[in-house]
Amino acid sequence: MGESLSNLLIGWASRDITPTGKVSLCGQFHIRITEEIHDPLTVTALALESDDKNEQAIIVSIDAVAVAQCVIDGCCDRLSNILPEFRPNMLLISATHTHTAPDQPRPFTDFGRPKMADDVMTKEAYADLLIEKISEAAVEAWNKRTAGSLSWGRGYAVIGFNRRAAYFDGSTRMYGRTDTADFSHIEGHEDHAVELLFTYDPNHTLTGMIVNVPCPSQCTEISYFVSADYWHETREEIRSRLGAHIHILPQCSAAGDLSPHTLLNTRADSRMLRLKGYGEDYRMGRRRDIANRLATLIDEVLLLTSTDICDSVQFRHRNISLDLPRRRATEADFADAQKQVALAEERLALLESSDPMSLEYSSAFASRSFYQQVIDLYHAQQRGECLSLPIELHVLRIGEIAMCSNRFEYYLDYGDRIKGRSKALQTFVVQLAGDATYLPTERSIHGGSYGAFIAGTAVGPDGGKQTVDVTVSAINEFFSSV
Image (cartoon, rainbow, N blue to C red; front, side):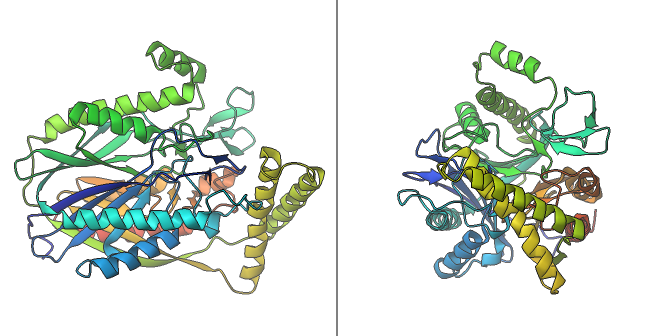
């Protein structure tokens, strides 16, 4: 069964998920209320089915910081009613990690917010919008599936950089300064590989692509407008070269410790962006530069792989349920969290007369909630609760490529382990396929700081190793003859 070739049925669809009216943007401790739309947010869906109907998948990408579990559950419920022939657990939804999309209800990363004004869209209302539009796109893609072909390839484009600066005292800091005498090195390495999957109609005319990039879309992460970040410019650039009809499904590969912001040579890079004609705004210039780099790479890879289009491929898809050990809150974690909550409460007392929506007040409010979660976790684990985290992993074989997903902001080391051990010709790692929390390495936990300490992480390196082992085992079962 696993060795048989299948003529795939392929369908594409997309929907606009841009909110209307005022929203609270996700991705920072402080509140950002806006009604400015810089560019649209999009959901893109790719439906795949084997000609014998045994294997199926709907792969979805959304311009969002993550995918709330309530959104996944809501979409699965809708699809089970609308598409009885489709198995809802074959739905894979991931996010690009833009920090300029609305909040969703995400208990693990709920920093806490003061009460919003009545004219601000609630997290729950936006989740309902996502469920509606994702489901519409998934259903349309499924209903449009027709015979098609595939090609795949990869190349290199410098998009993301490691964002954790390490110091001589052994500490590490996300976005830490590198212009000080105590700066030692950048903590981890970087991945510049871009994995590409192209789809074609029966005449071998290009219809769409998956673009898998190891970098979250957060060039303009501190802005006060709604935006898909660099994926907006990237879509526009690709379509200007290949046609407005082309579907583009972005995926973020393992990049929990990466971002589009370099910690070194920023002044020189800013000058080069100006010389390219991208303007004085460094962050917006980075968006345009990334778009050009990706589109140029896609042109190159598409030209090469169009000579090797496959009309029939091996196609498998497995959904794996897994219980991971929760990261344990230690006495030291508990004591530090108590200290941080007390400091936040002191700041809130000093800011009592401030606007609750202000940067200072809302940051302190979020910090208190953020660290209170650690205190609550410590007490729960002392009672024998919150000791495991149920997750799901998707593993697919599509021709000679493997695709594997997880819900985390997955540090690059874990992605490297999967790619290194995978028997597939190419391996697409897909992070942020769920309610994202950081999954740091032992090295990062030793260095500390945001993204590595227990606040903001649900699982530690032991859980990370388990996800790697289970994923690799499933991939290599699909490629057992390799």
